[in-house]
Amino acid sequence: MLLKGEGASRGLPFSKEKGKIIVNDKIILLFAIDTKGGKAMQPDNVIEMLHITKRFPGIIANDDITLQLRRGEVHALLGENGAGKSTLMSVLFGLYQPEEGTIRKNGQEVKINNPNDATALGIGMVHQHFKLIEVFTVLDNIILGAETTKLGFLQKKEARAKVEALSEKYGLKVDLDAKVEDITVGMQQRVEILKMLYRDNEILIFDEPTAVLTPQEIEDLLETMRAFAAEGKSILFISHKLNEIMSVADRVTVLRKGKYVGTVDTKDTDKQSLSNMMVGRPVQLEVVKDEAKPQQPVLQVRNLRVPSATHKRDAVNDVSFDVRAGEIVCIAGIDGNGQSELVYGLTGLEKCSGGTVTLCGEDISHASIRERGQNMSHIPEDRHKHGLILDFTLEQNMVLQRFQEPKFQHNGFIDNAAVRSYSDQLIGQYDVRSGQGSITVARSMSGGNQQKAIIARELDRDKPLIMAVQPTRGLDVGAIEYIHSQLIAERDKGNAILLVSLELDEVMSLSDRILVLYEGEIVGELDPKKTDVQELGLYMAGAKRQDRKGASGV
Image (cartoon, rainbow, N blue to C red; front, side, top):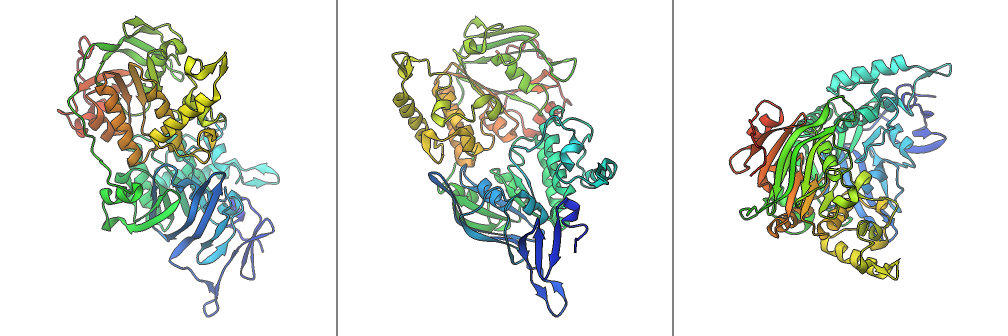
């Protein structure tokens, strides 16, 4: 018989017979029947991943890992970059097949061959890098693959009503008719969540869901997770952020280098203990630095204007500031207030519509990206779009801006041995983990290790100005500790650092000066030693504003 409201609602041929669930003629679940009551028994553990092993060339990503998810709990998965967290969740979602181990749902073994099987079992996943079609509308993205049809025609009216009801119920407001390419990253994540809910998923996997969100969006998401758990949904939550884990998770499973370390109740642990479990050593969670000793200006920005791609007004409006040698200046603000366009204007990725940019005493307002790069390192906001060539090897990416230097050439040809040696050195220094070392294709690496590779490359270029945009996005506490120490070391060497960050803890602890950007304008210049997060938040929201006459930062 065909079951309505289960596989049928997800657009899949789905039937139960004689204790089996059959999808597309494949048995994916054998379930137990309570012969006395005639009902399927429901164990406490809704999902059990038992002794899972997954190998890739040169690396064991998951090495005999066991994970148990209870009904109605938020279960965090914590580990260093490359510890195997996303791989394990991809196994559960059917993207990878394990070489060893079994998966059980409600106590019965299941075989998940692909994401359609996972969906039929009520398992949904929000990936770290969203799986959306940018030229489709929000509604089309949500129903794609699970469309309701009648006589061969798409029934969008019913789908819209269902999505609107879900949106209202969970506070996930979205414009269903907007194209995905025109909405913010936070809105895109809401679309991914609604995709899961539309398919009636009861087991929700969130892979680094807060990595690209603003503080307010993060709090909204955590509140949504709590609401899901209160309803009886079960959540697997991959995160590096210990504050979030302690806030929302009931239990935490820790992985390290592909192995299972342990599972603890959050009420019985603390951030320091979790970081020690994750990294295997004590981690300094607070930034330690000496007083800054600013010198001459390295970057001078005057009355800069950068046009907006989506609005008629300028995204950056009459902005002026200096960044001096030996200091870290942070651009703080809620995402979407012109930070990206400011960075694009300074690096040459976007043409400025007015103002001047002076770097090391030279006007670079009309210089090319390559010319600006002579005195500037850039850790970009989007590591896939602007940081890496994903189908190049790691060693090729390490010398993207330096391959023409004499040390990497021999008789006009690239010296592959020199490139390999240099890449191996950076990989070791920054602990960039990859299956095949320098010859690993960048696309196959975890997001955190891709980020570490970019940071290694840019900091080693030793330029007078370092533009670090979200430098620790997606990194674990051990990597964050190291990157922060490297940025401080660059500052103490006399280099100037322009930091752009949405992480308020990072803004407050790493900065020597804070410039708050609101609606494309700098509305405040703050000393982190003389302010707090609450005051910073008022400037970020536009509730407070300074009159910055001169605006030179001197």
